[in-house]
Amino acid sequence: MTNVRALLIANSADADSGFVGERLRHHGVAFDECLREYPGEWSDLAGHDLVVLLGSEWSVYWDHVSREVHAESTLIREATRTGVPIFGICFGAQIICHAMGGSVQRAARPEVGWHRVDSAVPEVIAVGPWLQWHFDGFTPAPGWEVMASSPSGPQAIRSGRTFATQFHPEANESMLAAWTTGSDDLARLGLSADDVMVQTRDHVKTSRLACERLVDWFMNEVAFGPR
Image (cartoon, rainbow, N blue to C red; front, side, top):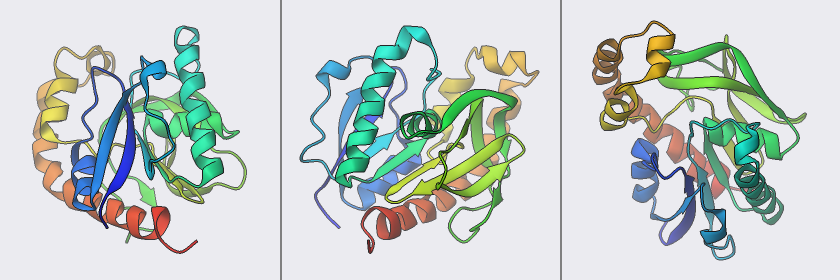
């Protein structure tokens, strides 16, 4: 597969697509980066073959980002209407649910660090451990398939040509080094940045291979497979 053009939606301070982006490029994907803070500057969806929604420190229900959330939700609905595949990660999964009739709420059990998931399709979505970093959870709209879950809630969902994960398959060591530096989230949960980095160095070789398998399945079966 070659010459696949994708819109990459991300925040300006955290636009690294990590292992997911690396594997998508292996499939011939080229990205047009669109920063969440500046929706008026985004490239048009027309002429693009894929949308990738990265994670964010935002919550979809924050009033001060309502304009930006509305713009991204509109893009998601338009991509769905026109059959453009979507791959969402963490906040990307949450805003897909928000846009498509589900809900997003504060998680009763936030997850930060490396965790296993319960996978209905372990040959596609490995049980992990996967990197988690979220304080919100989501409830998909009726009719969506929940493909993986954890005690915190759904972890992977699909409907048609849209797929999303609550966990972070893209997470690599350099990304975690940035996320853990001076993190209030870790301190709030009584976690150590050093411990998370030790676990990261321990797990990324396995998670990278699991991410490659997941992205291969998405590209071959969900995004560009038989309809």
